[in-house]
Length: 226
Image (tube, rainbow, N blue to C red):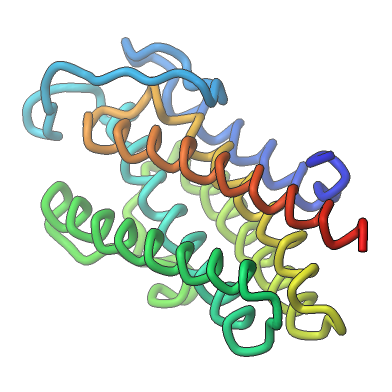
């Protein structure tokens, strides 16, 4: 069961993130963000910050990009550990697939951010104490708390994987947790993001990572049966 892999840190981080999205989305005309992973819709047109939407609703797109890029980067770090130390060819193949997919999505998100906000996308690795992030005063504190918790959780996963005697199985466990968090984050913005590009990307993340979660669970079951 997926729930067996979710520890208290993941739950706390998820709740903080959810409250942040709810806070910055209030007052907008968008539907409430949900974690409905099966919903797929294609908005009719692109809305740029200059064309429409409230400042608060536009912050959903900015926050999503600023949090998802470092989350993807940490997934790539975990996948590289599997490629270096893992022994199971099927797990290593999955790790390479994750790197390929998430590297492409990182580049996509960086491009969107530059186009929409006129600056390079800041991350925890480049912004230090996150002082460079341009957030509204209403969301700033919750956003920074969410990002710190995400960074702490990602580092904990990396350390657990690096020190595991069975890298293949630990990679599957930790990446399942990691993907579950990403699908939750993406599910929250499927309906609330201003840009159709953000919504489409979020839908893609939910779909692809749910498929990989199912694959990893199957691989863990096979390993346990041996």
